[in-house]
Image 1 (tube, each protein chain N blue to C red):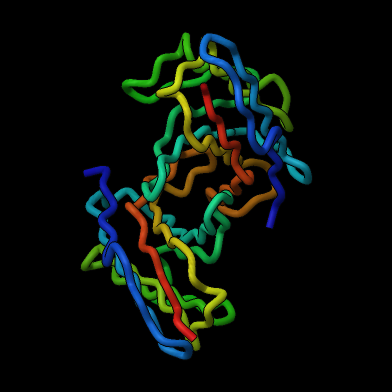
Image 2 (image 1 turned 180 degrees about the vertical axis):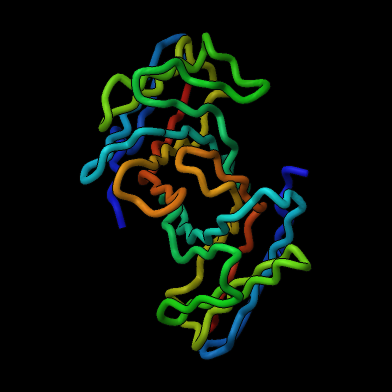
Length: 113
Length: 117
C-alpha cells in the first residue's frame, strides 16, 4: 500500500514532442504529489507538485494531471527540449511536514534534437 | 526553491575508515532532514529521517550503528559512515523540509559520491 508505481521506465521523444510520465498510488492517505528532475551526478530538483483539490497544475512547460478516483497522476512536458533529458521521479506522501516521500522508480527521458 | 548544500561532493577513503557528510539548509530552518542512498540508475532509497534535537528513525535494514546521523541544529545534519567498506560506496543525498515551506515540500542537496577502496 506504500508503493508508487511509475511508467514508463524510459522514454525517447523528438524535440518539441510532449513526453508523458505516469504514476499510480494505492494509499488513499497520500495527499501531496511532487515531481523531481535529476541530472546525472546531481541531487533531485523539485519541479512541480500537486494536491488532490485540483485536477491540473501548470508551471511553465510542466503540467501535472491528477485523477483522484483512479489514484493516478502524470507529468506532461510541453515543447520538450534536449536540455530536458534527465531522470524524472514521481513521489507521494501525506501533506504533513516532515513526512517521508515515497518515490517511484524513475523514468529516464531522452529528447533528441 | 529553498537551498540545501552538502559537503563534501565526493570522497574517496580506505576501507575501515569513517567518513562524515554534512547537509545544510542555507535559507530555511530544517525541522526534518532525510538521508537517502542511490545506486546507479535506481531510485532513491530512504535510509533515515531525523528531526532536530531528536534521535534519527532508521528504515528497516539500515544499520544505525554504521550510519550515524546527527541533527543537532535547525540548519545542519550529519551522516557518518563508520568503518566504511567497499559495499558502502554509493551516492548519498540529503533532503530537508521545514518552516516556511509549503505542505511537505522537500529540497535535496547535490549529493555526495562516496568511494571506499
